[in-house]
Length: 335
Ligand SMILES: C[S@@+](CC[C@H](N)C(=O)[O-])C[C@H]1O[C@@H](n2cnc3c(N)ncnc32)[C@H](O)[C@@H]1O
Image 1 (cartoon, rainbow, N blue to C red):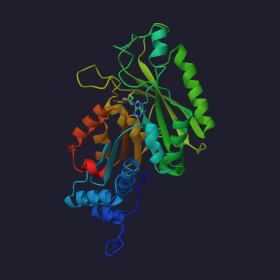
Image 2: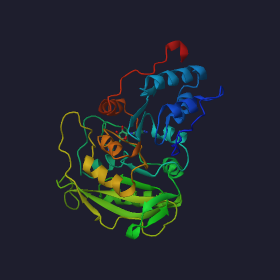
Image 3: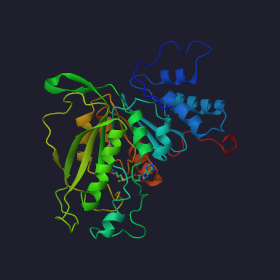
Image 4: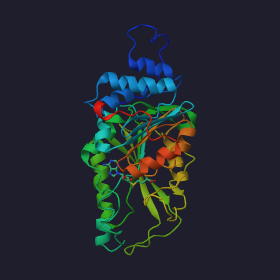
């Protein structure tokens, strides 16, 4: 399980002969939440045929060199001051199973939608991309994935409540949904109903105003996306920052080479993240895409868990953090 630790490293635990690798790893990094012991567990889970001693040795060597960055195929780690990034190349539906329950303060994510291409294409509001619709896999959030998101969100998160008072409530889920059209409305209502069934509280919707018109023939050309706000658990007073309007204006990125086709502006992502987390909190994006905002979030003290199934985007994010390709190699014989 990936466990986000808030406690200080355990002093003195390395002195005994029985100190575990988790103790070594935790003591090797000095402050803030520690993912490393958890990463060891994660490596074992993803490489069940690798001898525990081998994993242990690799993690320990890398920590000694002070550059624990690639910890297994598809699992990367970066640290900047007290803040951390765990970057995972994999299927979110699998990764979610390995995350500790009630360990994440906020999920801010922009999932793929099957409806976002086929239905729109059918009603003539958008042209299909080359080949089969979008270049990434299209599917709608299902019950199991939403349920897993509910499980990993904190149930006792601290919020900056009304008049600066600290309030306790469930962790936040800010979920991008497709632009509103006559077909997507119905889908979005179904999604809200499903989430409520699973224990989420629905607070409402923010509008992202793109400032630039897109396509749309039914009811005006599209200039917006909805972002739904849920919390994990029952409604708990007013958690929201009253200084923030419900329309967020951030200019949509114009298409350029090397950009993710659904890439969101960093300023929008940071406004959302800042509205539901504070420094020291853990924020996850389970469909991170290009993830250009991660550097900013980490530099503002957020602990980030980022997942995408596409190697291309994980590689780009690694580049942002100057993560070398092979830090912790396992030879074929060890796998
Ligand atoms: C709408 S895009 C996110 C774009 C992102 N907000 C950005 O700014 O670049 C959805 C992403 O989900 C990823 N994805 C699709 N299915 C996935 C899965 N099962 N597990 C993890 N990621 C997945 C795609 O590769 C794609 O990058």
